[in-house]
Length: 292
Ligand SMILES: Nc1ncnc2c1ncn2[C@@H]1O[C@H](COP(=O)(O)OP(=O)(O)OP(=O)(O)O)[C@@H](O)[C@H]1O
Image 1 (cartoon, rainbow, N blue to C red):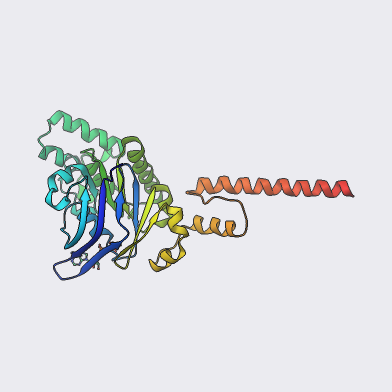
Image 2 (cartoon, helix red, strand yellow):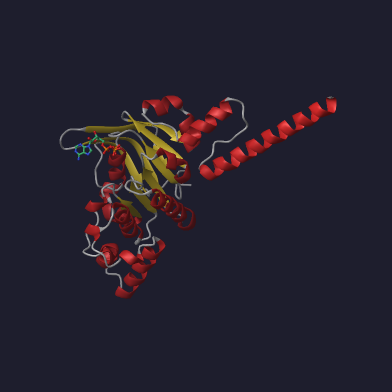
């Protein structure tokens, strides 16, 4: 399978001469993958995303999206990538939520009836139909995220980039956002590229994780592979999810458990462990009685 995104040893210099290097391992994404980029503040995650979007040009290194250089093919690339920026206020520009979601379709001169159908469809799937007539400025942080996501999804992009999508979301909205992103990937084949500091969510939303730190892509692998790499995690000031820590501890003490991806899996493993333990206790009691 041809990768949809390839980044090799990227160097960026901002106008004030701040230099950002993203070297080390190549950053490669296959179509339909869910990728999470982790790293401490200032590691260059947003800078990397801006290069993939063609908003910045590298001083050195290569960036390829669908076989094209994004900064030289801006319109083609942006037709295929939906994006939700960290600060959604900067991207919501319509006077009403409806206008904001319809913005790109109107620009593309799509027929009015089709626009209406698509806006209502995407609003329905994000459960924000009741917000369509509202003024975006007065929405809550979480509602704004959903509106920005609707605007990104309206063009049915191949790739969806989300910079800190779980910021400002309450636990229920966070769970809904995870389900929604997984739905987009699994049912519509959308490739997901996500940055987050919310480490506990990563196993639920990522097939693969990249760690950026100190000018390098320092690790790549499944969430559990990366979380097990204590050196890399420490160096990048990352702490594994609490469930990973707990179950790694149990494993190291000789218990036969897998590392769970979420609370439901953890519950199943613990129930199995406890019922095995109960059976062992029962057998022990019986054999003691027999021998007495
Ligand atoms: N427009 C800019 N001008 C100058 N320097 C910048 C600019 N944008 C980012 N930087 C610098 O580039 C470096 C990488 O920033 P970037 O925003 O890519 O990091 P990040 O990993 O996304 O951080 P965070 O987790 O805090 O969002 C930082 O040192 C930052 O100060």
